Amino acid sequence: MLVSLDPTDARPLYLQIMDEVRRALVVGTLRPEDPVPSVRDLASQLVVNPRTVSQAYHELEREGVLYVRRGQGTFVAAAARSDRRTLGRKVAKRAVLDARRNGLGVEELIATIREIAAKEDRRPAVPASTTTRGDNR
Amino acid sequence: MTAHAVATRGLTKRYGRDTALDRVDLQVPDGAVFVLIGANGAGKSTTFRLLMNLERPDEGAAEILGLDTASRGPEARAQVGYVPERLDHSYGWMTCARLLQHVSTYYAAWDFGYADHLSKTFALRLDRRVGTLSKGESRRLQLVLALAHRPPVLLLDEPTDGLDLAMRTRALSLLAEHLADTPATVLMSTHQIHEVDGLADHMGVLRDGRLVAQMSRDEIQRTVRRYRAEVPELWQAPPDLQAGGVRSSTRREMQWTLIGDERAVVERLTQAGALVREVSAMTLEAAALALLTQDVTR
Image 1 (cartoon, helix red, strand yellow):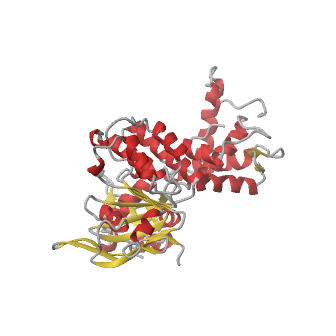
Image 2 (cartoon, rainbow over the protein chains, first blue to last red):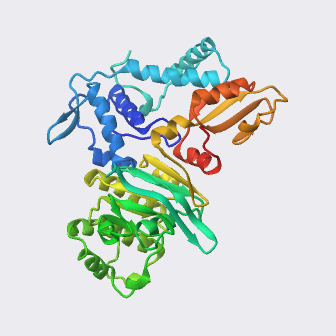
Image 3 (cartoon, each protein chain N blue to C red):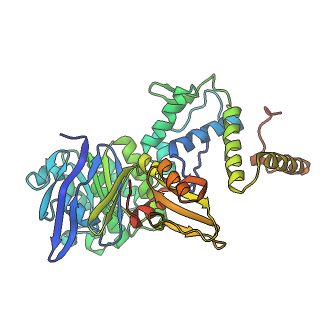
């Protein structure tokens, strides 16, 4: 799993880390029973407070996404489903807030999204990094 | 006595007629990574020197892990890893290896394996004489000396100052690893606030020797926010909203960074005739800038 944080994102870091784990599950780079990086390694890699990583992992544990194997580390729970709904809601919320800030109505936004998506679909080469694995559609 | 690993009460230091520190009540919670910011000369380094009992306060007192730094200085210092603003050159004739060995004898908890690991990570040339080190090398040596005995309190006065970009990142990654292995309370000063955005969970702001704010990250997130609003064209901001405000070129839109409870601020803006369009949280650096220049109004 690759975690990257956006330095301009002002949301609490533990939430950003949680979202990155959720995203990895949806995209499929993280699957049930996979290990996640240790608190120490992720803290070092992201230059964040180890407590922040612990907090993110604890929350995900509470949600049943991760579990701890005593002495072995933290793993993705077998029952962890890729939570497309939660992720989708977050993406949508960001879009709605952005639209509102730009003075656009929701209907206007949705129509434009459809228009752009249709155009994108007609494009032959979508960069590999943005395609989702075969479990969608 | 308290849940504060580092605490000062009315700490005051004068140099002649200049007041370097003015009744500072600093409270660093146990286990916090507390970042102290302020302009040059605001009193950051003076705070560190007083905590290390390298200078005596004119008034007030300081404690480290409940130990009074004036009456029990050596005991308090034994609990601390300190990176000073400037390197003490009294050991200039020693090689780095010799200095490491010398300092290790002062600490029962000195971890030789860890000291080696740190020296390698920082690419220290152990055969060099301390007096011939560059600023960056001195700083790296100081970091090894401060961390190798795994003290419960770290006092880091601009720990990345003088380091190049790659080394700064390495030093801060190492600090994150260190804290994962060895829980500690950190009080650090820096001008590079963006660098410690991920590490800091508390921030204190010194202005002209006064501690004008000290807050947890949550508190900063909640109370320092950016407000964008539409305003009538010839709108006059009420006096209490003039600070921190920027008007758009068309004069129909204004943006403020304001410190205070969000609901109260929105109400104040609304009552003044502004239509608040957006309220957003800020990065630590942007919040720091607001705290450095504005007074906290509650």
